Amino acid sequence: MILRRIVPNLNVDDASTGHDFYEEFLGLRKEFDLGWVASFRSPTNPSVQVSLVAGDATAPELSSLSVQVADVDAAYAEAQRRGYEIVHPLTHEPWGVRRFFVRDPHGVVVNVVGHAD
Image: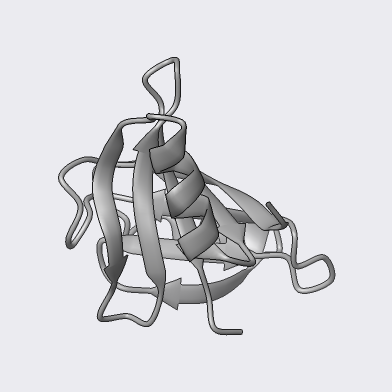
């Protein structure tokens, strides 16, 4: 599996607040803001990123981590082959990503995502 990026998802009460801390204090740039999720990335090092998550538009529970992979279909097939619990099936989301949620052996929910970029 080729990993492109791993992003911590901070589960918060309100993802629409506190942006100045990440933008002004930490110097990150807001990459996107969907209201329920906002993500901030370093302008000089794109692998440095953090997301605020207050809910999820389509998945039944929140994820703690987002892992961007080169081939999300292959990752999904491998998770199924290994018998891992799929929390949210492989889905084309309205905001332009293809993703699934899988539970790790410790119970942590991981968002595995493919981007067109």
